Length: 211
Image (cartoon, rainbow, N blue to C red; front, side):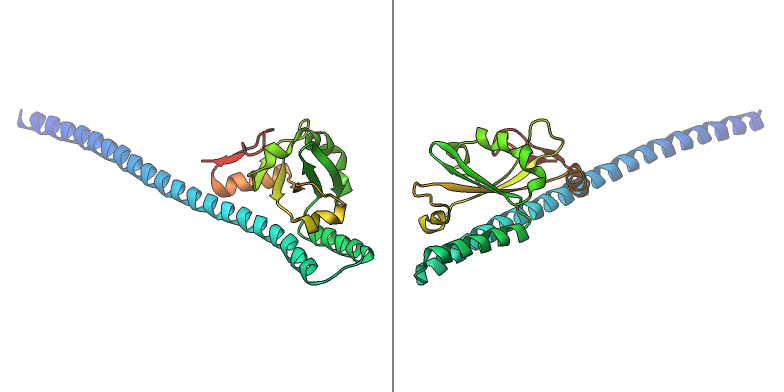
């Protein structure tokens, strides 16, 4: 009788221990997952901030390229031939910064496009024609979807001085849009690094990185 009670007590104790261990394990895993999610989210936010800082620095670097040239124009009287040489130098510098094209917009829309990488020239023409000065004003950096293409283009909006615009014989207030092409591989790496999904739109400024 006593032996049966002891066996029953041991059996019940074993069941209670197993249930307790299981519940404790579930709670522990839940807490670990919660802690991991918090840390991963913090990591993603920090990486996103770092990327946004890089985008900002790239924009400033490009704008500085134009501003330095404008400063030179302010100090030196230049002939038409010298303007042509400085224009070639500027385009060469942009190409060195991995810029694939340069487009100039005025109130009426796209004024002209200069391709620094002919490989993708036909893909961007229609898209650039659809953009307007009003859409670009106030923007600095964004990604834009290219119709019928598997990857977007990264764009930087620059605000040049009249002296810079003179390189292209433009006299009306205008903005310069420079861009470079991104591949699917670029965005897969970006998503893996940030733990975020990259959303890019056919409308300027609507693209973003989302956790």
